[in-house]
Length: 270
Image (cartoon, rainbow, N blue to C red; front, top):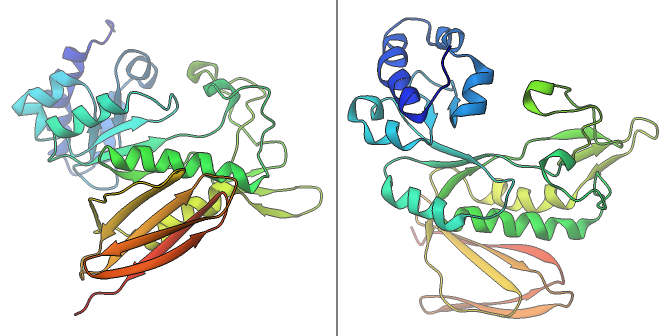
C-alpha cells in the first residue's frame, strides 16, 4: 500500500468510510484500515460509540464537504502540553464539531522526565493535572480523557508494542494505584482534581465567561441546563488564599486551602 497522505485519508473518509457507514455492521470499517500505516502517516482515529462517530483532525477531510459529513468530532492528544493557540484556532474554524482531548498520562516514553518517580503518590501533583484540564477546557475542549484508570505500584501492567513505540518496561501513572503486595489503594492527586470536574461539571453544561484575577488562582464557571452555576477554583500557591466570587448581586467568600481545588455551586432560582 502506498504511503498515506492527508489527501488520501480524506479520500478514505469520503469514499470508503461513506460506503461502510451505509452498511449494517459499522465495525467492519476497521478491517479496511491498516492501523500501523494510518497511525504513522496521518492523524486519524476511528471511534465507534455510535454509527457516525468518525474523529479526524486532518484539514483535507474537514474542508471536503463530501467527507466532512462523516466527521463528528475533533480529537487530539495532550502529551506535549502546548500549541493551545493552534487548538483554539481549530475550534474556532470548526466550531460546530466538538473538540475532544482523548489521551494523556505521565509516561517516560511520552516525555515525562525519568527523574520523576512513577507512579506519583503525592496529592500536590494534582495541581499539575488541574491546570492541564483548565488549559484544555479554555480552548473549547468538551471531553477530557486520562489514559490509565488503575495501575499497580510499579506503574503497570503495561502493553509492549514496538509498532506503537511501547517498550518493556513502559512505566506510567494512573488515576488510582493498587499495590499488589500490600493491597493498599491510593487515590492520587489527579483523582481528586479530575473528580471535581467529573462530578460537578456534567454533560450538557456550558462554559461561561469569568472576569477578574487573583495571584496563583484560576477559576472556570459553567451553566447547567436548569440554569444553575458551577465554578471550579484552583489555588496553586503553597499558602491559603481568600477570594470573593461574585455572581450578579451575590458574593461568596471562599478561603481556598494551599494547593487545592474547590467547587462552588449555585442552584437555579427556578
